[in-house]
Image 1 (cartoon, rainbow, N blue to C red):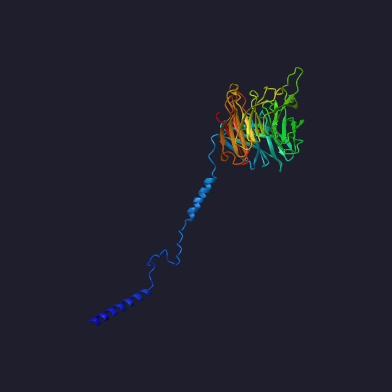
Image 2: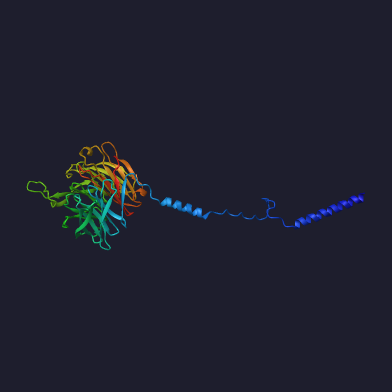
Length: 437
């Protein structure tokens, strides 16, 4: 019995060994292997990457790029853009009633825009082409809206063009430009600042920089009336008061000079009504109390005696002409200084309501710009300091430097709407309504 049991155990062991060796020789089916131990020394196979939907990824990227490039919503004060120039706009001017806007560009053209309705929604333009290789650098519209005066470089000449209105049957009134004359100037550098006295008695020109420091005065017919040397290290710009009484020169020195237009008088001591009564410019006063030089000047109404200066330090100052109508007895008084947060004030203009009742009650509206930033301020009035009314972001202004700005000045009793016009490096002229003060 014992021997029989041993035989059975031996046979069972042999059978087990036989089946175990067969199963080890047969390849295992895919997916049946046990999971590898984290501590196993065998190398793990890298997991396959998830397939990316390239089409969906590209579509998402394009949508993101389009959203970034889309223009921002228009600013609430914007009335309209005037587009058509093919180069950066270098100077802009607006007629007194806001109906005409003149602009000159590096694209060798002068455009006269005619805004045909009070909402500025419709506009026509007349184009004047310069000679090949020439372009306008400064432009002005006379106060009577009869002429456009433009400085043309590189020849340092002034051109005068007449504005002619024409109403077509069943259509709005349009304006066209008729060249009248062109005359040379003694300037040695590009003319960057130009103003026409409100009675058309004088055209005043200046070249920015430190090498051509003489201001020249011409008649509307091109006669050189006076050359005024300015020993102020560096010229920036000039401004003429709306009553053609004063000329202000913005220069590198803080002691900014004001000059008076002296006109010929008759036997009774009265200034003749003729526009050809200019006799000379003579020094009248100096702006005191400024810490650094002045980039821009702007005169308010003669009745308010306001003069605003924009500094190279980014502040603007409000000055009171000491004696309205004649400042020769005393220098203007510095009334207030306001920091704008800008590195400098590169463009500046001021607007005051012509309504006599509001001159002493409503603050002046001051527009200024540096680079792509446009700011609108309510100036000082009484004990109330200046207040920032609007700061227009670059994407809602010109997306580049604001190269020029100007207010229209509708005469008293006019139903015309006062507007602000700006121009910039994005080849666009923009028309803005004025904010509430």
